[in-house]
Length: 474
Image 1: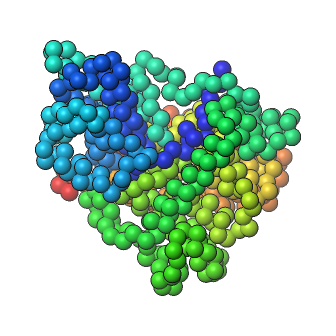
Image 2 (image 1 turned 120 degrees about the vertical axis):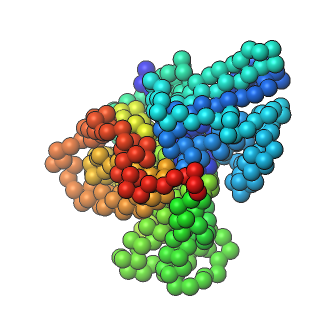
């Protein structure tokens, strides 16, 4: 049976700065403590040790993996936790060396001793490995190993292959050619096929509400980022730029009560083609500055690429002629394209470099934009293929292991490329295309396997090697 991946597996609400290095470990910690509770062991736990391997160890400090693990062990939920309170919570934990396990059992916990980084050791299945060991009162222990495989997805060792639901879908999709065939045979558009599949998990009303929530969180993250000043955390002393860009584009302060009025102000200012390009960049940078500051964003399909799709959606909502229901159609189409890359390649920069993040998000955005601008299914797939084709081989080289340089600007570039790819597809003739979406997904996976490890989220190559940062001194 083909792997069943919901749109809401691709789009998850969570906390920055990384889906694979923060959200995944956060969820793994929650799952581990839940297992202890269900086994009746939680009251007997006296200590927990967390071992981080491979990429999680090499860039974990910059990506906040240690913070995410501690929040997960306390069973705070990344979807609803007050992100403003995270620094104080962690500061208190470090000072008191006490952790409230699953919010119920107080144990001694010193992050310096109980979170161990193993940068020179990787586990076999995936570069993002972490192991939890709970010591019990009777001298025994409970141990589990997890892998954070990209986009916030996690796999427990021994359960490989069941990290996503295996429900029976009316239109099982493994490759782009499957989606294309269903659309042609059934006379449906891409979002219609996806809606019918989503009904295998939940009712239409719930799916609609979830799509509205995803769009709201995306929109809110753009808004917050456009109004936040200051220095991003982590030690690079990177100045936030979105607010300054926003101020210049609006030509001074504007009066608005909420995000709706704010978007109306943007529409009124519209400006030249150059201004619109600046707005798209501003939107993308705003989201990823929020992400870098441990703000709330939506994996799209990852946190490191969280700004691309919101930026293109904002472009559509503000500068095109948005139609009723189009945002949902965009997200459904984009989500299905993201699932194709998950199934046929990877969403993990530790496995595939940044082509697995910015490249995939750009392909998703290009497909979604083409769908809502009246493109056929053939043009939707052509747009996704064009966008990824021009991201193949993109390396992941975060300076200091932080999701800041070059990650924030890359979201702006990915958004602009998505719009360009969509325009090319809308003006093109798919029957003349030489490369299919399935072919580019296969090429991406082959490229990922051939790529040197130092270009896969290790901070050991590329820009990271040219601008070395010792986070221990920050």
